[in-house]
Amino acid sequence: MIKKVAILGSTGSIGQQTLEVIDLFSEKFQVLALAGGRNIELLEEQTRKYRPGIVAVMDPERARELRLRLGDLPVKVLEGLEGLCEIARLSQVEIVVMAVSGVVGLLPTLEAVNAGKTVALANKETLVAGGSLVMRAAREKGAIILPVDSEHSAIFQCLLRDREGISSLLLTASGGPFRGYTKEQLRRVTPREALRHPNWEMGRKITIDSATLMNKGLEVIEARWLFDVDYDKIQVVVHPQSIIHSMVSYIDGSVIAYMSVPDMRIPIQYALSWPERWNNNWPKLDFFALREITFEEPNVKNFPCLDLAYQAGRIGGTMPAVLNAANEVAVKLFLQNKIGFLEIPRLIEETMGHHQVISNPDLGDILESDQEARQRVKALAK
Ligand code: NDP
Ligand code: MG
Image (cartoon, rainbow, N blue to C red; front, side):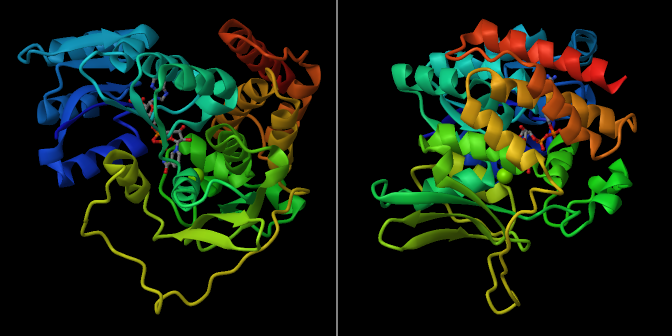
């Protein structure tokens, strides 16, 4: 059977690797729709190759330009957030790969879930900000959410055997490029240094999140929603080699771990092949070449973002949306060289401190809190 897919964020790191997987199994897929943010050069190339009937570009001006460039093809070019939402709910689409970066993925994800689609979800900011809404809608509409994030794909696979008797989920973390740095060293790190991740090639935003450990914090909240487990039962273990992608420990003392080479195409492929497994020709784990695998505790004193995420998650309501929005803006300011690395957690903490939490928020509350947090960080950074 041919799987009909739409990819939101097809021009990004996850989006391009999704298309690589589709290339390898081209007889199994039909690409019905693609969407990107601003990179219309790549989106044009992808459209000419995969021939989707519909594409969307977030930036309206670029959408107009893409329309001109693709004038010779029978393709509809949509624009803006509404364009992304329209693609997410297209009636012929079965699987929506959600690979945009940032909370901008929340509305399209809700659209896809409300339309009963299977969502291969890479975009963690969506679950951080709107986890309760997305999971409730998925339950009501019977939509399946399959994790693409490597840790969550790992846990999903560990749980295929036993969902009972879990004592904790153990999320592994590489520790990022600054593992072992002192506060004094961290004060002076540059965006260029932060963008050099030891084990993964990813988009800029998530690469900075990996350096601050906020990525792991966002993943803790993502795990809480995907697997319906309390924060007390989610633990982070630093494992610099990124071979074990996460583990589940059980009440009888058993621990089930998932291992693979660090290659995002593997969890992407699994989300697309599930419930089957497909053969590929990528490098496999070579245990004799693996000299060691080691573990250590995360250093939350030097990397406070992890604790801030736990705090926001435990407070709940609109607080995780505020954490996420503050982080998105702070990361952007850091990448623009406007603030230092250690200002990122400081701005997030202050923004959280100003927020009046709304418990059981609706979509409007979440979007408003997100906007308020963005304004707050900009004001605090001045
Ligand atoms: P990239 O920055 O490489 O790509 C982001 C994609 O989203 C691009 O297609 C980009 O479009 C699009 N985009 C960015 N901003 C907007 C916007 N405002 N509106 C619409 N589209 C937008 O990111 P990644 O692929 O690395 O990450 C994507 C998501 O997956 C993130 O949530 C990340 O946390 C998650 N993830 C990524 C992993 C990885 O290995 N890369 C691993 C696990 C999770 P354009 O480039 O055309 O502007
Ligand atoms: Mg991850």
